Length: 155
Image (cartoon, rainbow, N blue to C red; front, side, top):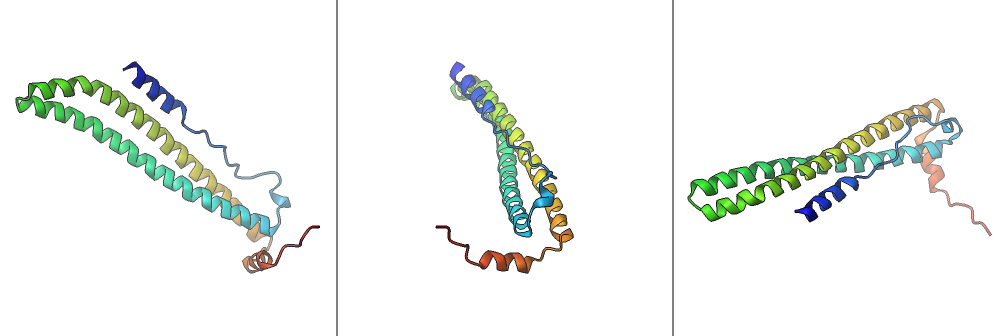
């Protein structure tokens, strides 16, 4: 049991702390149209990853909660069916499974919240950058044409 508690505590400490995405940066006014477009593209990528992480964490949290409920039902079913050995075994394992399920749900909930925050930050940054792109009279056709040109070779 001691090993399991250590593993659970280690899992809790492994939750990543993502760097905050600033909505507005002091250097934004100096960005070229191509740089703004590149940052918008980066925000789109971050938003895709954050949505995926949020959805996966929500699924994990739901599964952990259902597993905890199923363990209790299994103990009751084994006891009612007259399988004393199975009931005792499940009853002994239930607290451990419950502890692991609670820790897993806690980590998943934290990761889901973190992903949702990151998604919100990326959306806010993208909205700001899009406004900047428009206010600078940037044109998507110019940015794409510029990207298609070969880059100068340095000697």
